[in-house]
Image 1 (cartoon, rainbow, N blue to C red):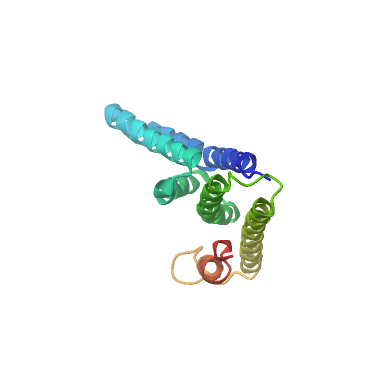
Image 2 (cartoon, rainbow, N blue to C red):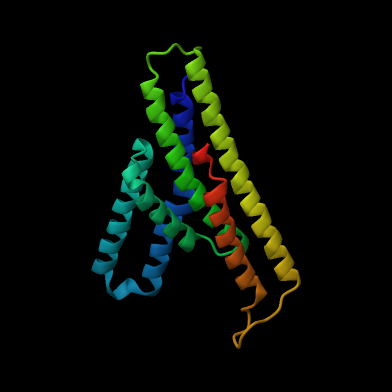
Length: 201
């Protein structure tokens, strides 16, 4: 079994996720900012638009080539688009998990693409290639399962804290909801990364 066609499909999915959740929302947000703030500074705005557009193209190039050197940079750009494009607390949690999923998937796919190239001398139905395919499949499924756990637990905490809201501090609206979801997200991502990360398989 060859991993190359599957890796190409995963890269296309990553491109679509990047465009839908990051690149397009960020460009649209810049247009909104222009209509409200930068109308008198049109040259500065155009340069800013061009800069973010070029940075987005670099991120897209990184996904196509799966260069690990661009992984952190592309994930940062991806998170910027998430921040500008999502306004619901539930969707924001999804955005955080998507950024982590994006980062981890990049590592796994890049690693196995290199391994697939190193196994070119083996027949497609060989034990080595079959084992490589099953290991790749297991790591991706584990990553998806961990992402599902993180989203489910986080959304569950959000539902509970929205139902039993306790206001904290002087400013209205800040309370157990914000505290608990922030704590839960950082704790879950830390535990997943430290103890359950598929890349350790």
